[in-house]
Length: 352
Image 1 (cartoon, helix red, strand yellow):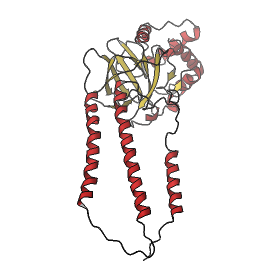
Image 2 (spheres, helix red, strand yellow):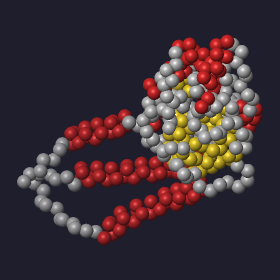
Image 3 (cartoon, helix red, strand yellow):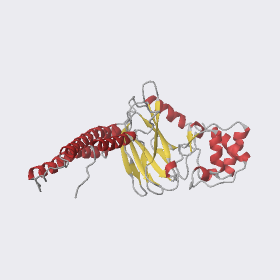
């Protein structure tokens, strides 16, 4: 039986097409990356934990690329050099070569061991608490938002975690309902949040870029957790020490009592409509984490777990029908009329 051998031109065309398709899916931008372009890039580490992962990632990538190039080169040589040619006799059939078989078995083992050793040592190091004073933050995952408690400060925030740069931080993670995952790519250390169990992340965030007193990093839940999993987002704000102290001082201040009539009416509606049953406007109130803490809500740039810009239009849409914004959210539709919505928007926006 004659086996049809593809022509060199057709083989080169196929290889070129596959190469172009592969490159089309690669990250081909060569100018320096910026936070604006890649807010969740794992390739711009901003903590010792993320840097530790990055230092393993790139050597493994280059080793893998080298192996791929070598294998493809040998395969290409074999295809072209040893392909069947018309009139040639059947070549000698070889059924085994112990030296070659040992070589291509032992070499991958050596490579895997070389990769595994620094990987495992970094995993152990990441699970070890640093010596000395560590700043404690408790993280609670709920469907579909994050709560952050700062025991040393007596403060609580929702969907924003504030970190002092240059200071070791311990994030104690657990869930109030189903399994979630805490992940801020530039800080590294994706970890599950589980009911009845506390997981840990230790990290020290780097200083913000020169000339900035803080930097905002995006994060999200990385474990499928229900209808609005994709909408369970958060922000991490890394402060310089001076900026962090200012933030703490501002958070400990009670929100100003609304003086405008519409905002004052909103404060009454907040109580009458039952919002107070789940939400608190006291920054020190960590009770039960029933719903996001709304203290200083008007100062937050984002709302609905970092989904929307915090403005009157988006806030009104959320208050009118939370289920339309975040399906499955525990906040019910309170059937508020336009006057109540406008008043609540004015009140919540005044909480600064």
